[in-house]
Every structure is written in structure tokens, then in C-alpha cells.
Image 1 (tube, rainbow over the protein chains, first blue to last red):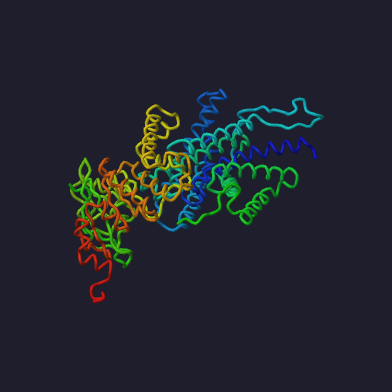
Image 2 (tube, rainbow over the protein chains, first blue to last red):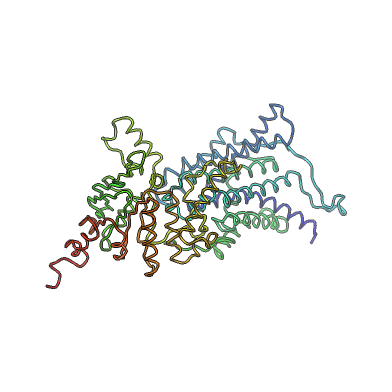
Length: 308
Length: 288
């Protein structure tokens, strides 16, 4: 097999995986702390795509044309707004159902997901939209091309990898080394006990939603800059894929979500590169089914222990 | 001086009356024990005081330096007509409805341990104690992110306090071990240390000596007495080990079938005929 083709699929897979990982983190953190799947999470990513376009247009109209400044402000603004969305989703859709059955928040999640999709459709139109490429240029390995063969990485893709690593690094540090993260881990292990020790667990849950949504926001910005086009429905498939990644890595585990994202991204990219592009989603979900059958706790999840 | 005063506490689970009109008081700086046969409602009383349950009716008042607080109110007890006036009272009640919850009880100064140890098993001993001090740090996420000086100082103080308690409870060698890996006796001590890290004025211990041998039980008894005498903590205790109870209690409240059947000093309670009946069966059933 052509080594350059393999190399190219590895690059594509890593980039796809980094995106899945960033979104999967939101699923896994919410599940870890509340034991429920936030199905509206994919929509936050979709909103980030629209926000990116809006911020790019705004900055252009103000005459800001330095690429790093535009990138930074777009990222900052988008993440701030998506974090706000994450906070609002929890307040509106989940908190009022705190004391009800396990199924109710799930239905509410589907509801809020439809609301978000359609509010974007109403306010921004149903057509596929796009943004102009902000950062052009590619790196080719080898630089002069070995007989027309090379592995190509765009600058945007390099940025995706860097941003994804940075995002996950900050998140891991926040959870493992700060007092807030300690309170999050305590709440995850025993919410009632944390509350009895004076931790405001409602606030911790808000923080978790905000962090998850911020990560999805980062992913939304990066993907939009990479692919350039989006519509109000992109959150669904990407959300489900990221959820697959979270389950694959072991839902509830932060490093698991990142690993799951990479594994899913790589296998999807290899499948579409060497077998068939049309069936790549089928392959991704076949992996999900396989994991659920053979290793339900995921790659890095601990087996379910019955709590006393 | 009274620290905690429980008045006419009722707790119903559906049709089951777990507690009916339970009243007792806990004096500041004393050790008060709740005793009674299994199923008498001792743990239910604890659960109501610490906000684990929401009592059906009654009142639990805790006197703080700033004045009395009604714990049931902090939990967001249902509003009644009497709450409508004066406006300041109504405002306080509405605020409790919105922001209330059992974390407010802990912040008011009540801490507890459980009969079945309930540590954060995957967190280290030190982290367990730090979580208990969470509310006293700068809780600002930004301050934590940039590591502001105030934040680091608060964190440093918290670690120092945690280490002090770990040493006091002879756990200084286990600082960085996950709590789930500690021995049973160590876990019991860590749980008490964690409760103390919330800086409580009232410490509720639910069977602290359960599963401990005689030496460990004696150590716990000494420790409880020291906490009261040297640190000014008030202790409310549930315990089945009568020797421990009689040794360290200043006052004993006896519960049976969800009602208080006797109250008094250890010597008084020991000779109360109703207490003997509750523990040994009624007089009629006894062998003549």
C-alpha cells in the first residue's frame, strides 16, 4: 500500500479525532456528574459554527484584518457565547427536572435540541452557509513531493491539533489540580455527600455544562474554519459521533473521551480512505455496537460497581 | 446554653410515621447521645438535622454567633400563609426556596459522618479534606485559573489545616493514598476529620465505633472527648456501644418507635424503667 496514502489518512484521522474528542469531553463530564446523556450537546457545536461566521463578519466589518487577532477574538467570542448556551440549557431543560424520573431529562434533552436547531433555522435561514477561508497554506511532506506523492497538512489543520491539545490540557489541569476540579470529582463520586460538606453541587453542575459547551465551542470554530460550510443540522451527526467516541473511551472518563475520539477518528478515516466513503458512518456506529456488546465500560472506563 | 433545639419534629414516609413529635436540646460544648433499639428513628433524626431528608413538620433551630437559624427553612420548607408577613421574612423564605439545599446546612455549621462510611473513595485522604473546605476557598474559577495570590494563599491555608487534622488523627502517612485503600479504622477517622474540616459548630457522628475493636473504640472515645474539651465542638452521637455512650455523654436522649421516651444524664437514663422496657421488652412480656 502507498505509504503516503496511509500517512494522509493518519493525519486526517487525527484531526477528525481531535474534533470528536473535544466534543466527547462534554458528554462524558455531564454523564459523570449527573448520570445522563446531554443530547443537546451537539447543537451547541452547531451554534458555534454560526457564531464563528457572525464574528468573522463582524470583525471584517470593523476592519480587523490581522489573522491572529481575528482568530483569537472569534475563538474568544464564540466560546463565551457557547458557554452561555451550555449554562442556559442546563438551567432551562435539566435543573427543573432534578427530582423527577431518569427518563424525563432525556426527553427534555431531545426537546431542547429541536428548539435550538429550529431557532437557528428561523433566525439564520435553512440554507447551507459558509465562511471564506481565513488561513490558507499547506505543509507538504516531503516538501518537494516524491514523484507526485506527499502527505498534506493545511495550516488550519495544524491549528486544530494544537487547539485541541491545548483545550484538553487546560481541562485536565482544571479537573485534576484545582479546587474547583476537586469539587467536581467529589460531586461525581457522591453528590449527596459533597452537598453535606457544603459544596454547592448545583453550581458545580453549571460549571460542568459551561466547560463542556466551551469545548464544543472550540471544536465548532475549528471545524468551521477547516470545512467552511455548515447548516443548522450539523450538530446531530457530529454529536452522535462524539457520543460514540465518549462511549468508546468509557463514558465518565475524561482521558477516555479523548482516546475514544482519536480511535474513532482514525478508524473512520482509514475506512473511508481504503474501503468506502459512503459507509463511513455505518462503520462508526458498527464500532459503537461492538463496544456496547464486548466492552460496555469502554476502553478506559472502570466496570460498573454497584453503589451501596 | 442551647446550641441546637429540636421541637416537635415529625417525619412521615407516605403512611409511615418515622418520627413523631421528637423534641430535645443540645447544649453548647456537650456530648449528647441518641440511643434506642434498632429502627427507633435515630438515624432519621440525623438525616433531618443534616438536611438529608426534609422533615414533614417541626422546627430545628441552631444558634449561631449571628443569631438563630431555622435549618428547615434553609432547606426550602414549603411556604405557608404565616410566611407572607413581614416582607423581610418572606424575602428570606423565598431566597431559601431558590438557593436553599443541604449545602446550606453544612455552611450553617452542621457536619456529619455516616454509619456506612461515605468517603470519596477515589480521592486521596488530603483531597477528601480539601473538598470539605471548598466553600472557604476563593470559589472564583478565574482566580483559580490564573492562580491569583489570594487564591493560592487560601489553598495553602486549607492544605495546612487538612494536614493538621490528618496528623491529629494519625493519618499523616496516608496523605496521598486514595481513601478507598485505607483500612477500616483509618477510614472511620478520616471521615470524622473530613467532617471537622467543614469547621462545624455541631458534629453529628452516626455510630463512629461500629466495626471497631475495643482499643480503637477507646481511641475514638478519647478523641471525641478531646474535640469537645479542646476544640469547643459540640457532638451529637448515635452509638450502640453502651459503654462508650455512658462514658462520654453529658446527656442522653432515648428514642423508641420514633418518640422520645426518656432524657437525662447517663445515670438517670440507665435506671429509667421505660428505657429498660424498650430495650428488654415490655414488663408484661418479662419473666416474673
